[in-house]
Image 1 (cartoon, rainbow, N blue to C red):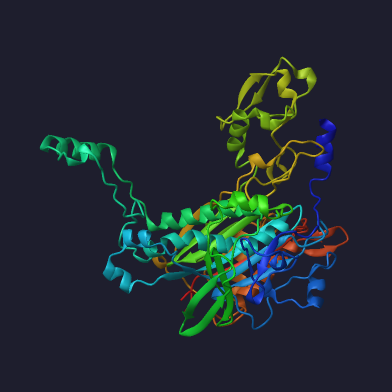
Image 2: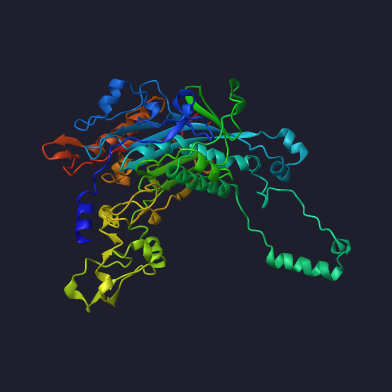
Amino acid sequence: MISKVKAALANIMGGSGASSSQHSTPVANGSVVPSRHLPERLAVKFPFERPSFLELTPEELQLAADHIHRPVITPPEGRRLLWNAGYAEVINAGKSQNNEDQACCEVVYVERRDDDSRRNSFSSTEDQEEEVSELFFHHWGLFDGHAGPGAAIMASKLLHLQICDQLRDIVDILQKSSVPPPICLSNEVKTQSGPQAEESPTDEDRVLTNEAACRFHQEKQVSHESLVIGAIENAFKQMGCLVRKYHLLSCITSVSTFSVGGTHIGTREMPEYSESFCAQAVQQGGFLVIVCELGSTTSPQDQQIEHKRSTYHALGGCCAMAVVYLLGKLYVANAGDSRAIIIRNGKVIPMSREFTPESERQRLQFLAFLQPELLGNEFTHLEFPRRIQYKELGRRMLFRDHSMTGWAYKLIEEDDLKFPLIYGEGKKARVMATIGVTRGLGDHDLKVYNSNIHIKPFLSCLPEVRVYDLAKQDHCPDDVMVLGTDGLWDVTNDKEVADVVANVLSEYGPDHPRRFTMVAHELVLRSRGILKERGWRLANEKLGSGDDISVFVIPLGGPGTYT
């Protein structure tokens, strides 16, 4: 076992450059739509590519893949992202063949799911005549891939569509913010039949019923905000399932006619396929707008589809961070070690935290305690300050388990000689000496080196979602949200990021079209460093980031930013 662990540690920083092998259906402007029961002729793989909004030519794409000079890549002049956000990226220094980071920036329109019983349970007839059957959200995403770019590419194509699908059930509810969400969406009332139905309740029965209702049927207050959080969480879970087995889904049928800002977008009809999924991507006002009507990915037919259709696996895994702007609030969902901060009036507000073996130690240890078979008789769920030597058997040594935040002493037994579930410290901490993040998408085939011990049971796809209410804060033109993969945060702390933001923005006026792009460019440039004889070095001569680096800088203030 020791030789296995040493080999794993020796190769821990290596990466596979294999391109992804997922299948999809292309729609307008290069967006990708999954489909159920589609013919084989429509099934194509997700090829390796950089974010479409970079609009790279073949020559620029080759330049962006240069591991030696590592040029910083930004969107071309004249290409405006949502809210005039800035973006920049740089490839790694040779850790993997391709840049395994991916990014996404979309406007997504959500149409109410056609379900009369659900709609009637919440809206009166007069309300239904006045209500709008759709809403939209803005989406930015960063996906930090590892062991191949496949999972990151797939997530960048599909995660926002999964969020759209989850929001379809609550379109009417979200549009009526003054009305509490209903506990049930169905207005069906069960009726009794038989002799008991003819008996009318007595006054005593009514009193007992009312008392029981007060005691046992109290309703929790659920906010509209928590519904959106739940939708995003479920979207991540569904995305995790799709990365595991990307089945061909049924059907592109028709997309209704839509108008955005008075501009007719149009329709797309493919009547030969059964109804389940519809989507369309169009150019509107210089932005890529996706209009979709997404069917459930967990329908009863899925088991039959699994036996009838081909199955596609996404290579590797990825950390996922998604920012959703909906109805005046920013929802920041993070699963992995990417991070987001808000810089408001020069002060830093953390909007996420890293999920690493150290930060989730107790969750991992508790799972191993409950299911020791997951450890393959090679690891121990206990943590010790260092590796135990055989000669220390019978001594008392510091340890801690899943129930402890502090340390205590225990008598060392033979089982304690096994390799610890969590080994290392800081950025070097690993689960089973293999992976340094504990949340994300993919990694379903990940095993301990040269063994049959699966690591996926210890990894979670559930994000932590934090909410920032833009309407309750006053913002100046220099207030921003910064999203970055770990390539940024490994070498640049929050204060340094805030200083760079302030310095760069002071050089550009509030109306400069590329001021936030220049901030993103400078953040990536400083974190990458300068190539010297001893490698990439920062201004203070410390080691620069040799990882892929991707950064969004999203403005929060100023006229016309998010209207």
